[in-house]
Image (cartoon, rainbow, N blue to C red; front, side, top):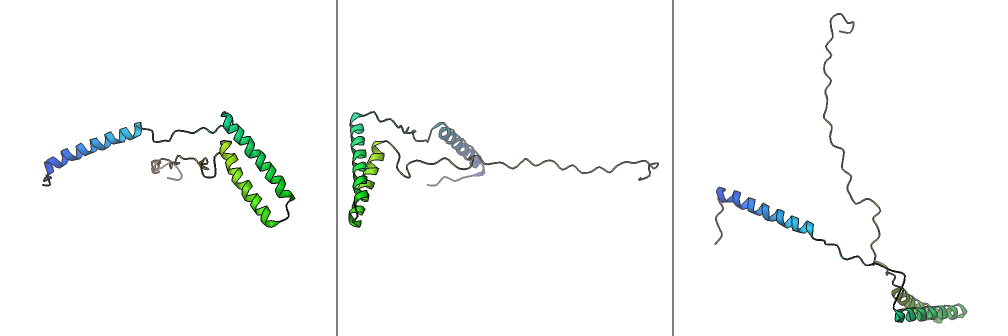
Length: 136
């Protein structure tokens, strides 16, 4: 059964709802919704990763030299595809983010510029001049 809302209990229910909304707002402000920051470092410390990185770079150099000497277009295409695949691995082992994995800094400030506060309008007061003045 739906409770009957009267003028008397509407005010109490409205205050109760406003208090609940304010409490939710405070809780949301206290929580951090930001994801933990992942630090991208240039130094790779794992010895296995270092070995793989050196091997991949050596393979890329070898395939590049083979591709320069090649005249067959199909072979050049295969070499370039292999170099592309190895370059992705090299970026992964070197701990560099791929395209679309880092959000660039905004070009403009994030805070909105507020318009200046309106100033009160001061009306010109009629000048009180004496009869003896020439413009009065």
